[in-house]
Length: 268
Image (cartoon, rainbow, N blue to C red):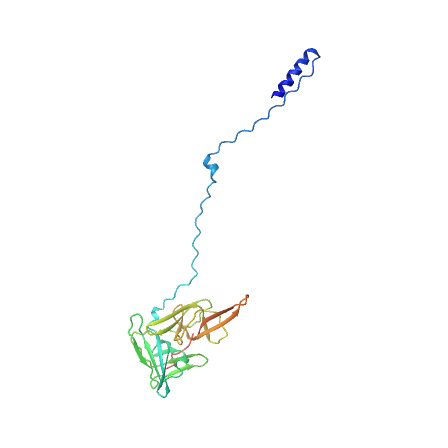
């Protein structure tokens, strides 16, 4: 502002002694100040706007299949005790599992009863049922094996009155459907293993489920989800594959011989 005022005074003094000069140009207008911004509340300026709350995502649905309740089969599943005279005063004892079908018939694996001197069928011992031992008498009943299957039926086995006969299924479960393998460690201790039915493997008349059995389970029943007998347990199958990184991956599955549709009514 000081420089503008001095210039104006000099121009006015010259105007007295000389011809009038062109009027001085108007001083440049001062810039118009910008409109002030509205005041911002201190809290709003200091903290960002809160994010909107959204509902929590729903919990993922469980993919684990429901467990199959096999308690009603405790009066059907039996332990098989086989004693074999080896001579020289030596007696060998082995155990397996079977399932009572009613009318004196017991289904088990052929390899469990293939060589015997005596066979005991033990009912009960679980769910408060009394332990009852029935001895298979070959002079009264029969031991019938089915060709191409590790399956045998004993007849004329005297079962207790409370024993319930299991039924044989008429259709084979599809791959992926749940099944359960039943075995006995001893009359009072059951081993129940559930898993999906696997696609049919190379073994003819076989049913594989994604479960692992152990010693003593041989001859035990494999049930479908409705607790109908679909197979007689024979053993495990182990498959090994090589992974891309060179490691080996071993897969063990339980194998039963398919008895779906098997007619045992003619076995007397």
